[in-house]
Amino acid sequence: MKMLLIAGTLTLVLSACGGSSGDNKEADKPVNPPPVTEPTPDPARTFPDNTLWGESIRYFAEEQEGQNRITSVTHSAEGNLCYLTEQTLPENYYRFPPKWGSRVDCKNAQGEVFFSHHSTGNNILKQVLFTQQGQFVVAELIQATADGARFLQYYLQLTLHNSQGEVLQQKLVSHDASKHEQYLYVFDASPEYEAGPEGVYRFTLNNTAKQGNALLFDISTVKLQWHAQSLYMLSYIDGVSLYRFDANLEQRWVKQVAPNYSLLHSRLGFFNPAFTFSDDEILLAFESTDAEAKAYNWHFGRNLPLRGGDKQGYKNITLAAYDLQGEFLRDFRLLSEGRHEKLVDLTYQQGSLFIGANTHVKKFDKPNYTTEFDLVLMRTNPASGDILDYYVLDINQEDYATVFVPMPNQRFLFAGQNGYRQVDSNSQVSDGQGMVLEVTANGEITRTMFLHQPRNVSIESVVVTEQMQLLFGGIYDGPISHTCDNGDMSMCYQKAMLGLGSLTPLAQ
Image (cartoon, rainbow, N blue to C red; front, side, top):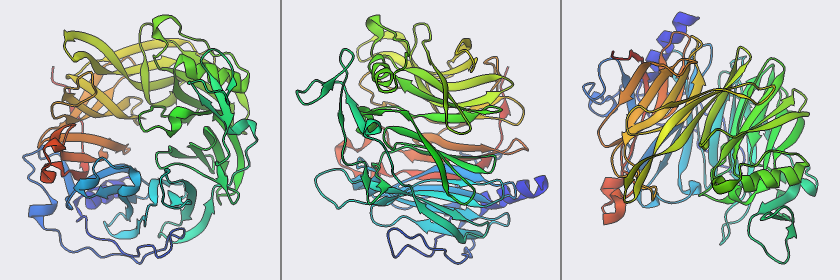
């Protein structure tokens, strides 16, 4: 099986990107397309010159006109691979997700496409996940409200496919929330709002469901994990809710784990909840400011600590533990000394909870350039909430992770982008390189992979095989903050890549 996985992933990466078949004819019913036989790839187009990133990295590119990005890569024990691609025309570069078309493609270990599904209309593919049996689940937002002046709202559809891509089950996520669970917490006063702790107000939303199904916005987080023959999902439904479905997508329970903050509806807000499993618990984390912690305490009747002082705008990470039936056990707020964190992800290992995050560090005293992003590896005690270790990793100018995952050798992998500059106004003013780091539990960087040029490069998703190879997806040859300001849309083009590579020992 392991040899099959190596051969399969190599075949997958070296296959042409190709087209797809079986586009949806109905917005709410994905279809099962027949297998696609791809043409012989054109090396000049499909395989860029290996001198770009070295002979050890093989990849193919999505180069359709406009913006392209591969945001999610996943694989099965049998060597099957699925990946999610998003594309849009240059003029929609700054538009919201409905203007981006999305597509999921799956290939078998021989490199043959056995499933391909395009979103239609304003629908948005969110994630694809393999089960332990080699089946896979596709999560997709299905437009539920008519186009108009307001933001579109969506149903969340889960579709279970067998290992050949045939539909086994399809469900819209239902909605049965109480009035209390539908409170929206805001931080600006209004006469019609109910006042709570200082600076926190709330009112009841009346548009969180339609025809018995939950309604979500286009930016809503959807995160899936398969554990002990069940599908668990974390999503922006009535704030943030954690779901458990059985192997046939029958809903077993749902638990609201964070209230509905106004920032969950804002494209400028950051929240990024994540979850993992210990031996017998679900461990969940999300970011919170003091104001959000006050709202959380008011909503649930709990007592998260506040940072106070001049750090009220800082975001720190909140941890919560639930049993496998969704019952709340305990929560903590990790108030790291003098720092604030943007959560990437978390994983449990040998009694400790390891958290990967980004942090803003004040380093300079220049106009519009005073801070820099660095990485954080934090080890905590999930029973007490104590911070046991806290490592800040500064590699090359701005270091910003979008991926934090465990590795088969008990180490951890950060991936994202570094080697660029970002000023205080949040504009990126130089090109970044794709970044992958292997890090020990003691915060030591042992192996790396960097993808630089042409223009801006970023790694968005990584799978580490048991043979320590990296399947990765992301973008390259892309614009940065003000590239498109001069009106030349050709400079706004961006390529996507799906690749296979290996980490290199850190030079001494």
